Image (cartoon, rainbow, N blue to C red; front, side):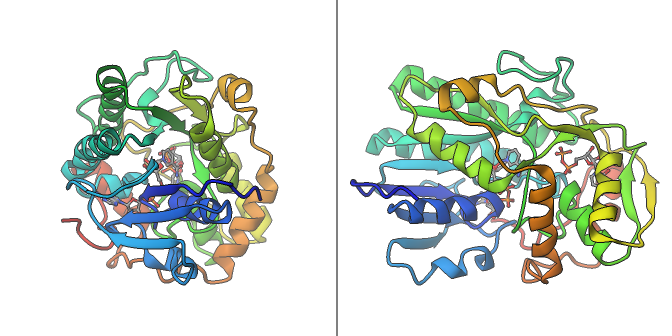
Length: 349
Ligand code: NAD
Ligand code: UDP
């Protein structure tokens, strides 16, 4: 791992979450001072306890919908629930986190002249009519559906980033992150990779939504962190948006079969209703990232899945916030029917 001659003070919002905790590790290993800010809505201290004793790591409980006055050189803005059942639990707070959170973090970046990276998402493309998705595509988002709090919140955050850039000359980086998986995913957040693994290991039915013909492309978390760091380090002229993800696309039914085979599970596959506005297909065009960041994912899906299965079979993740008495599948079904979703653990302030 490269060590930097100049130690930077780096803020990671959402640093106690899945991707954020891997990013904190990576930045510390590179020799930076890392300040992890999180309100523990979907993240947990367990994800960063192994970093707490390190002299260059600090953990702060803070909700980014409120202003933050600190001095930093770089900001990775990852704070936001990412799993559908979590961001639909308190949709108003989800939009506030994306929009007010972006305003607060951009204001901070402006004041201290920090460079700031936004964890945007493939969800800005909605249910895409262009396949694979390129950065030039403007998307197909339902602005009033159950996913809108997340999709439109993230779209508005992108708008704010570009307006702060044009109006205030803030140095910005916008990463459009596609589905990412790996150790420290929340075991009960209903995201498909963790959900299928947890179900398979418990010998419970594997819940495929719809016919399982919808596609996704999954990127292993260490590859994603590598891309985020490269984007932050790229020349200022590269503002993005840049698609980051693994273009290897397959159907959800194929994923279910693979997880059953790799865990040697006796679980059977069952079919449940498709949640509303669930994108039918998703695959990133990463030509821009390849060219400008010299980046492409290097972890094969079987390898990444094996590491993720190992994580969940070791009982890791058991310390994550409990979901009161409801399975992710049931919670998701309820979310799509009634507009509410499962409680991620603690209600955010
Ligand atoms: P995660 O839920 O594990 O992490 C998000 C973190 O943000 C959690 O620790 C949570 O407690 C924290 N948080 C939420 N609201 C907050 C607030 N108001 N103030 C402070 N902290 C807050 O999700 P993740 O998968 O690690 O995603 C990280 C980022 O990447 C998110 O912004 C997400 O939208 C984006 N992203 C992730 C994926 C993916 O597949 N994992 C795909 C696209 C985009
Ligand atoms: N999915 C599924 N069964 C599950 C969880 C998810 O079939 O138990 C499907 C879901 O409908 C979607 C895909 O898997 O089509 C990916 O879902 P996830 O929530 O992981 O991410 P997103 O929909 O945000 O891409």
